[in-house]
Amino acid sequence: MDDPVAIIGAGPAGLAIAACLRQTGVDFVIFEKEEQTAPAWRRHYERVHLHTTKRYSSLPFVPFPRNYPRYVPRDLFADYLDAYAQRFDLRPRFGETVRAITRQGRGWHVEATSGTLHASHVVIGSGNNAEPLMPGFAGTDAFRGQRLHSADYRNATPFAGQSVLIVGMGNTGAEIALDLVEGGARPTISVRGGVHIVPRELLGVPIQMIGMASRLMPQRINDALFPVILDLALGRLEKYGLRRPKQGMLQQIAVAARIPMIDVGTVRKIREGAIKIAPDIAKITERGAHFADGKHGEFDAIIFATGFRPGYARLLGPGIQPGRSGVNARASELGLYLIGFHNPVTGLLREISIEAEQIADDIRLRQDRKKVAEILPV
Image: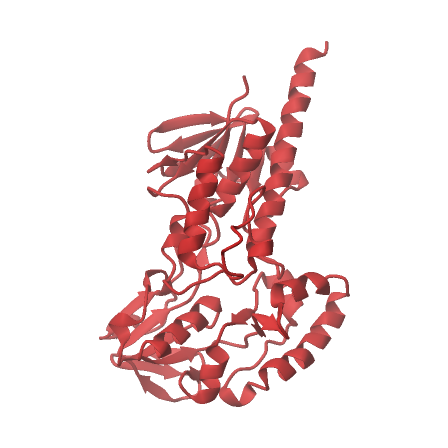
């Protein structure tokens, strides 16, 4: 009997690859350090919804229920994942922290909380949001107000009536600012460099679908057309302190893996003056922050929406590089795969579903070849 496949993480990526392996008859073990599926998703701020449509965001074999809204909210997505795990009898090993993944012959040793598993293949699906990134601004420790990472933000209630600085204007920072202003706070977003902004829908068409259609044209043409189209849809935002990066939107996705900010109402509040925009931070002070333009602002709290890092590299032995997310020559050769670490303009969950089926097929093919080699005479 073949050794099982070790799956690291029971989030959407880990569940998707497990379901695909179940369908192909390949044995597996899912390691999850928390006590529930998709812990990172459940810890998101309360108002969060998928930015991509339910039609193109479901996991393999199971579409979202018909009564779910087009953009699925956090709690319904968590319910969907629980039902998905139950449907395929996935049963992750909860409370199992993976400490090291090392090469052992043609397979792998996975050292976890309860012991070591010898695995035929390893699939890392722990996601890009494993470890919060806190920037090292000068003076941070001197700030007398509350400071926290966006990973610890839940809702606006504790900040009602307060002046709050949000550092970073990705999707998380922009939505937290919107949540804060709707909850009675006075938010300011510090934007470092430029930011590409797209509406969630353009003339009623989800931006995800427009992104899928845009792949039919060369990148340089898309990057030339999008600014014109978006200025018509959102207006020119330079006068509010928002400018586009020098890199085109699709170029930035391809080169820097940075997706645009998908607007769900933040831009309107910026236009109204309810959300302020500030440049990059030069220094944090006891009462607020000095900005790159020489101005100073006073704040009751600072929320760092400064992103995350995957964290899986520290688990791997020296010189082990799994390559990019999905199936590639390097991953297939090692039997070590990443899933859910590539977030294209067409949507992360859609990409996870594609990668899960490809990885499962690759593992099944490798195992079949091994069995044939064992049967045939040398």
